[in-house]
Image (cartoon, rainbow, N blue to C red; front, side, top):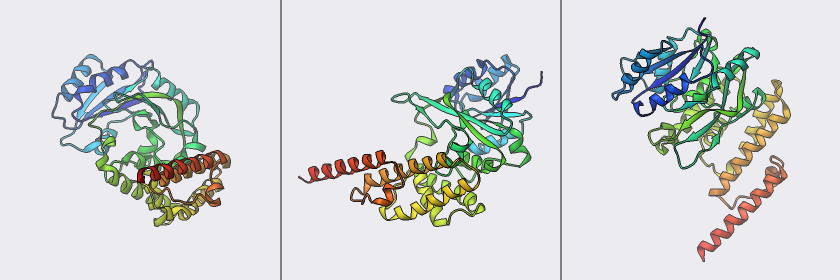
Length: 339
């Protein structure tokens, strides 16, 4: 039987959780895969653990880099070994649910116009477990991608020929948003989909780059550079508008004077999607939800902001009332602090 799925699992000093991640892959109800473990010059027992599993299961292939390449670089290195129709990403500390591969392959096989398929994720190992992420189809995920990363990389499966035939790789100059950059690079090649249930268990622990506050400004700059290339190529936004959008996408509160500028920015993004045949109702809802989050963040820092008609017409009545209540509480608490 021809192998049609490669599971790419990079590892760097991940020996503590690697065995559990590998076992999760081997327990899949879909068996026709190759597990490619790429050791990124680890100095712990990661390579030893990977080789022990490879000696027991012929579906496991282990390769090592000559020097540490980092997450984007080691994934790109792994691409050179992929010969299959489908590629699934899998981090060395996460756990796939048993039907993940079968569910994703069945979807992609029956929907030839879709090129990528992901899911929500269940976090574990932290203070509490939560289901996070976004479920939905192309009409939802692509407008959403203008504001945030819609995919959990460790839950993604895609058609590898999209990357191979178009010479697309992770951009090593864009960490920690190199995955977001990759999704925008394949934007035009086909449709996107995420399952609304979780197919990956995402481990929370102190060594993860995505959970270090020190990279927050770097994330904003990385998102800005990624969006600048995409938006400029499509003649959608100015650099100033892109920077404003990237600031919000990376969670940085903006000055209240930026509201009108951001309203114009959102209107241009909405017009782009409607012009290109995306569902108007879905796009409009995403725009309203994003703007609500934006205004809510500004209130946290600038509770004196005026909640005027321009804001009201861009969000739902219920969310506008929520903002008024939030402002009232913030003002009341500030007065109490002064007393």
